[in-house]
Length: 295
Image (cartoon, rainbow, N blue to C red; front, side):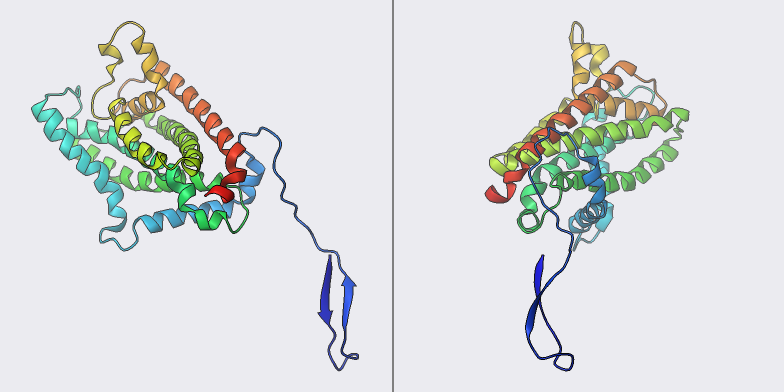
């Protein structure tokens, strides 16, 4: 690389000279390989990932009175509403578990899953200025939105512990499996969110599709009612876990509240989560090179 420098007056006659220097040069070229995730590149930008996660958390609660308490209030207020209408009016059964605790244990992972999808789906369009100015792995943007949702989830878990103490429900050793369900939900949300984020760049209709889709998805998932596989017959009990949130949330509530595990729905939902992550991130990587031009 050639650069121009100026020699001081007291060292030599004032003049400009060209000096040959060796400096590292980074070439950014389109990747021709069909990689789902370049782990090495993501790891190299791990500090940016952490910064974007923290930025999303700070922006979410910036200039709010309650701040991070909203992470608890969202599932808590939803639980109160469903407790009134489902438990008292509709008489929805929750087994031996008090319905408010039963509902909150399902709404807690669902809130994380829904917010992660919504945040990731809007993340690329919301980072327009960042994308058009500097290079970094674009996949970090939707992944950081999911990471920010994990922070809210961790905060809200404290409220779940308070409710369990209040109702005298204590977890068993199966609670150690809860991170498996949370990881599965995060993987599924990252895959779906990455796919929606890429589609939202090209088709802005998805900004309306995402909240509507998430709202309908909630009622296809046993968040505020018991696992319905025992209530249906035929092929449906085998197909319901194809909804990744179905088996993961039902089993999360089971391990937290001491219920029996449904290994079939857990295995199927984990497998579907992995497939959704592969499809979503693969599509994202194939179209990300055009984001700066059309965003």
